[in-house]
Amino acid sequence: MAHATVTDDDSGDNGRFDCRLHGPPAAAAKFTLRRLYATEFVIATARPLADIAAEPEPEVDGGGPDAPGRRVVGHFALVCRDHGDPAMTSLIQVRSDHGCPKR
Image (tube, rainbow, N blue to C red; front, side):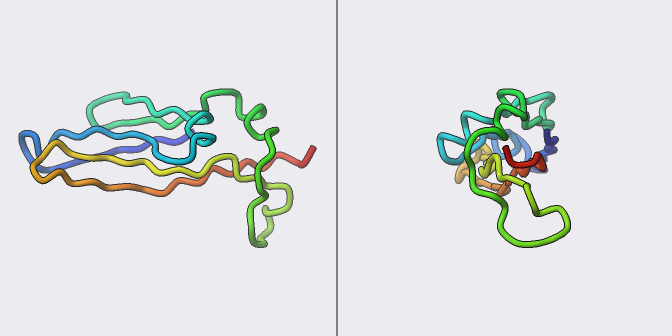
């Protein structure tokens, strides 16, 4: 689904960090975050994408050539926080669209 590389140039506890997905419970049930290496993460669907896309969700707002039939299947944030004092937190908003036709 998605690959994320996270870096922190600090040393010691300030350079160590943990990441998690944050969002509505419905989004949390659809996606998983797995750490591959110290700085590499994968966000993947927890179930087959076709099953997730079949659930009722609002359609993507706006126009564009690929907008008809596209559906938002998840909206959440990747949140990373270091172990420093004070702890620093960064986040990236993520929206997953799926271009399957309406059923």
